Length: 103
Image (tube, rainbow, N blue to C red; front, top):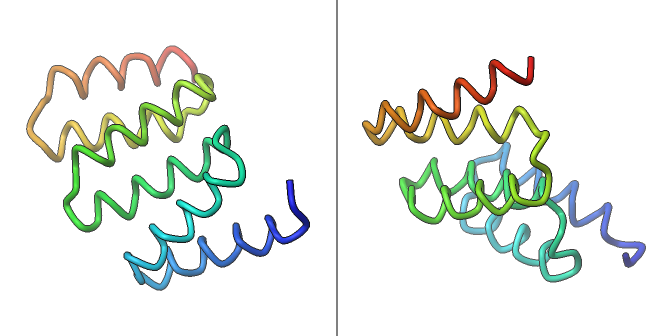
């Protein structure tokens, strides 16, 4: 990874926290271009997408994050919360059950 990767990561997180949504998504895209296996970038990009109500893209990115790191309980929680938000309670329960097994 390039030396500036950490700076990109910190900038992306700052943009996420500042709710500068389109800039945050662009920064996460840059991180993923450098490291397509960086599961945290998929996860946090999804949080921005949830914020702007792009639920399909958010779910796609959360699933990518989970496929890279299937042990990430935070990602499982975000997926379950997204399903609750979109009214799919049976899928939410499925992921909550997976989450409870891991705790």
